[in-house]
Image (cartoon, rainbow, N blue to C red; front, top):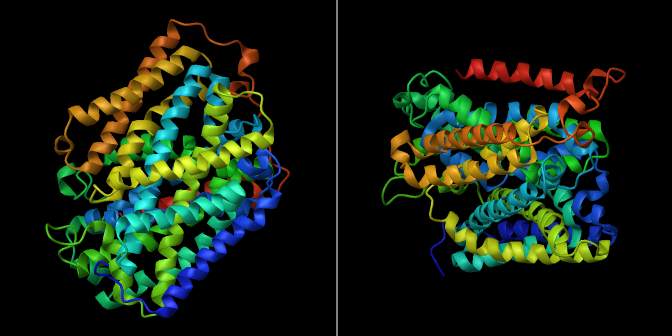
Amino acid sequence: MNKTLFDAGAVDYIVIIVYFIFVIGIGFLLKKYMKSGEDFFLSGRSIPTWITGLAFLSANLGALELLGMAANGAEYGIMTTHFYFVGAIPAMLFLGLYMMPFYYATKIRSVPEYLKLRYNEATRALNAVTFAVMTILVSGISLYSMGLIFKVLIGWSLTTSILFSAVVVLIYVGLGGLTSSIYNEVVQFFLIWIGLLPIPFLGLHELGGWHQMLAQLPDSFGHLWGDTMQASQNAMGISWLGIILGLGFVLGFGYWTTDFLVVQRGFAAKNLRSAQNTPIFATFFKMVVPLLVIVPGLIAAVLFHNLGKPGGPSYNLALPLLIQRYYPPGLLGLGLTAMLASFMSGMAGNITAFTSIFTYDIYQAYINKNASDKHYINVGRWSIVIGIIVSIGTAYIAGRYSSVMDYMQTLFSFFNAPLFGTFLLGMFWKRTTAWGGFWGLLCGVVGAFVAYFAIPAEFYGSAQASNFWRALIAWVITMVVTIVVSCFTEPKKKEELSGLVYCYSDKPNYKHLAWYKRPGILSAISLVILVILNIWLW
């Protein structure tokens, strides 16, 4: 047994055990409703907006959010909030207003399936394979994070901790499919908030308030935009231009509009309006998440002076250290359960996305095209097993990084940034051709890898800055190659593009509905609040 970080009591263990029994029980209860492939992979397209909205947010509220954002808050300061205000909310609104109608109205089952319809089979295959690889790598982050918590909680070895965590996710996702994942994500959403919300208030109280805390940190840690005129003025080593173009435009839009992990939650909505409102509804909660994760990172940077230093604890332990500091027995179990819930939420989201892609876009497309629904559900369940087994291996890759956020953004720059270029041209330029899309996407992915190995992070100023600029490079390569190849190849006919390109699609009209149900008005309200928050934290 290893030395543990937490002095957990019997009550704490009971809270954690009850939670695990509960999430597995949801899987058993929902198993009987999984009668068709649409039930298992897309929840029968019947989930209400408020549930899909919370699940949309919760699926992303995993290890990346808790360990990663708290770590980034401790390392870079309040500028980490850009991952929300610039890198998430505008893209989520764009997804709801403009891209979800394409996804939902065509009744596609996955993002690669849209690429097949808009471009060709080769583009679909390329995206399916790259997305499957990325999803398993990202799933490893959540698995590593869960294993780390078990290790420091009760002294299990990292391997034992990872294996136990993997088995729990395997059971409840394997039984109930996407529906089990979504309903658990809603429960996990509330658990995360209840379990972790006391930390920023307790920390600020100990430090004497917001301004007293900032007074003990580097000056740039307290500004969102004020120190971004030059990259050298802030800890992140990035200027406002890199933030807007690299993070806000390419990485943000590339993730939130094309990553099947989050888009899949919209697919499960009961109608098109609900699907559109799913990411829009989630933006209002997304604006508050920095209070839960980034503010604790700032507090940890003040309290733990050796955080991230040689011989000191990793930045990834910023939030666990605060839980250990503030939570007594009983409440400690709730806080740890909240963290475990977030990791399981993130991992389950990645595994359900991987399962759909593998079953529909790899197995059905190229191995067995005419099997029964029951057969595909069984393949989906076996792909969950395969995905989790591979994720166990990728968990050790995540452990090599001092901050899981750096690792996550590296993956996004490889895969999501080029894909966003492919989608942007495909949806809004009717002249984009099938082979233009394929070669643009392929060159963008290859270009991102070349940039990663050829240009060291120090050239850009920091690991985060390198991810932002690399994403922009990959996106530009995709756009240029796609446009050039499209100019020399034959585009599809208008009939083939109906419903797939903006100019050939029916625009939904909600003028007859109350204002609080209309995607456009809700988006406008969200943007106004976002502008106010940016000015306040300037």
